[in-house]
Image (tube, rainbow, N blue to C red; front, side, top):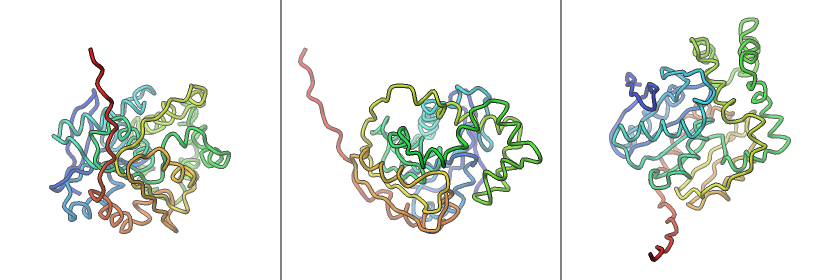
Length: 289
């Protein structure tokens, strides 16, 4: 990949990769990744005629790492993405997300239907499904509860040469790189704050809010060996999508689908982006004054 650029938005510095020409595609990573997650998809999309923008979301990679929990609320991070696209002169990109990046992509899509072309989400289904998880999903997401204890979580994960962190990550994804990245000053707390700001136990007690429908054509991709997210999240997402919906189950792939099945993911994205029309938003009659 080419050298990253940096832009100041919402009082944080966001590092990003910007390659190619053509219709813009925004690639959003999750925990504990950076734009490096997309190193296989970026050249494939560029060769396919797209302009690709892959930011290091706040708290990760070479971007700023504020230490306050409140700095990582989803609305704040969506605003980072909106501000980045505005600064780059991008009005209506395709948006692709994995893990927390998928959660941000979902939120971006239903909050700003006029500012998205196509939506592709990997591993993580619509937040409306995850708001009422099954007991199987709760068991798979046990680590989210561990991450809720500021200071304690960090100490447990670092203890004995990062033993617990290594056991949780296993040999998946860029496991060696994650260890180096999380050892950077402030990085571990920043990464864990994503969970503290958005997946605290208290959040389940708040009244459920209705989600606007996703009007963009949407592609969901899930790996059959995902140990963190159950298939129920992706299967249940269809009812929240008013635009064309497509689901691809990738056999033999784990949670990190862009790395486990890089060629297939690139092929799926190239075969999907720009191929369907968005659902038309219902027009409400104007009130007479």
